[in-house]
Image 1 (tube, one colour):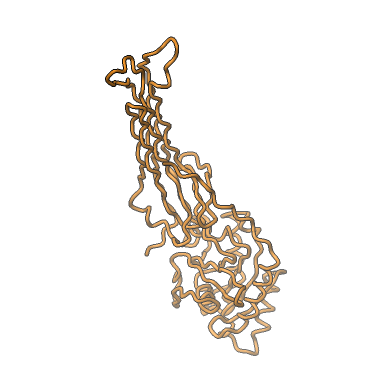
Image 2 (cartoon, one colour):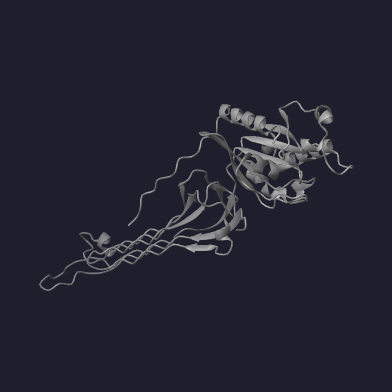
Length: 351
């Protein structure tokens, strides 16, 4: 299935039914009086966060969703039936905003969370409501109100604890394969990863975390170069970023320090808040260096890069250093409180 993380849809709530202007007509009951019922309410449109979905592909082709109109009122004090609501399922982590104004309406972060995005119109009043001592045979009634109509932008932001970033072929997908059950594509050419993927890292029976892999970044990504810029939003919910750097590039002209600085600059250009997130340095492909020069190579890089934070040197291919990295991440996450998740909304059902 193709990964789709953005969609524009139009939602149209149902119109309320019209009230009825009716009079009681029974044998032996003269002047029966008004008995016009009210119109039914129009159906509303809801969005529901479904944990079984991981893409917005369902909204790529079908983009207009219309709830049912309410029925008109009838005689004999019969109210019209309310229109059926419709519930649109979206992945957990979907941000819903008004496509015209850009205003964020709701952020669906909890499984089962439900949001009303277009309210159905109220039903009209029948002539029974207009009866009075001076108006015993009212012919007045009101029309049903139109339902809300709006254009929505749906934007999926993956829910992960740890996000990976780095240049293409920095070893992000290989690391995900090494520490989780996920199997992203791995190959010896750039941009192997074409869309974000998630992997669950199980440290112990009851301790685990979720890691997100996105396509590699290149210089100029914030301006649209490469693939990774359009997926950086998926790192905004993470609690920790791992900056992967290839410590043993095959290209003699490559400069790992320069590339690492370029990635950080792109991060800052894209979103200063994302740049301020806690970030660890992970030097990859240690197996490509002779054993006797590995420690010196790592020290030279850290000194040239002027890195002061946590640093790990690993080989995802052989597993060297991966266990220490995974346990350090788990300890950090255990000590770092997660942002509170909104409770699912509870809406009463309409008849």
